[in-house]
Image (cartoon, rainbow, N blue to C red; front, side, top):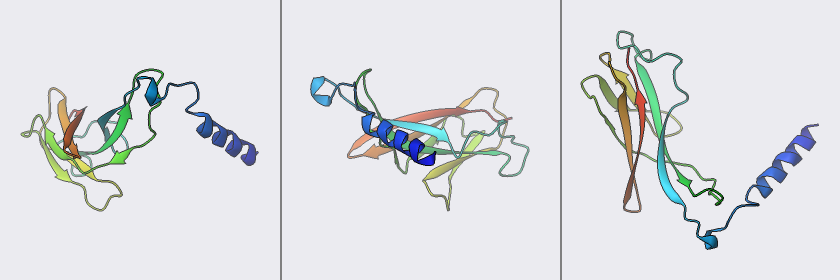
Length: 139
């Protein structure tokens, strides 16, 4: 049964590009930066009154591609070190994560945030800077 599942997966991967336009048909891919909690979003927002890790959320930035509907998108995600900023530095402090398998940033809540704060990652690749954002709330 495992062999059939593996075979189906292989066929799906090989055929994934079928039925979409190629780049010669006017398709242009766009490089984007996505910011996501890592390894996943906490079930409750970080609480500034707790000790680490209860007052923290960790984020990663990776580059990927978007394309118009019907166009093939390269299945490539690249994790890049980013320049990180936060919209409310009085309530959230940023620091680099150490020892992980991907470059990550830790957001530490030092005060409650009545409104979500925006975490921004700026990635420069081949002289072009692209930004991605994610929001978080601190209790």
